[in-house]
Image (cartoon, rainbow, N blue to C red; front, side):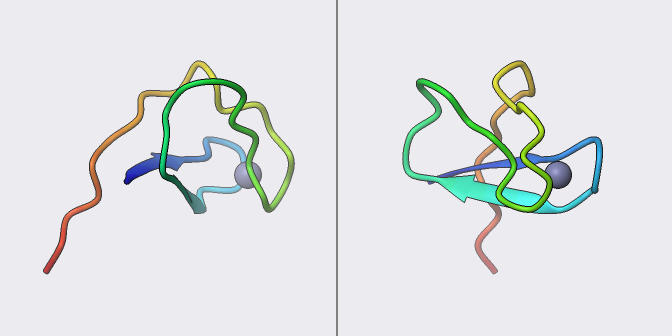
Length: 42
Ligand SMILES: [Zn+2]
């Protein structure tokens, strides 16, 4: 599981893969160039 934070709307988007296209589900901003991170589980 990966997470990216959208620089446009500041919301977090989750995906099971960091490959391929990754658009923000909230504002449709292209997140492909953003760095994927592992979400912290707590
Ligand atoms: Zn967004």
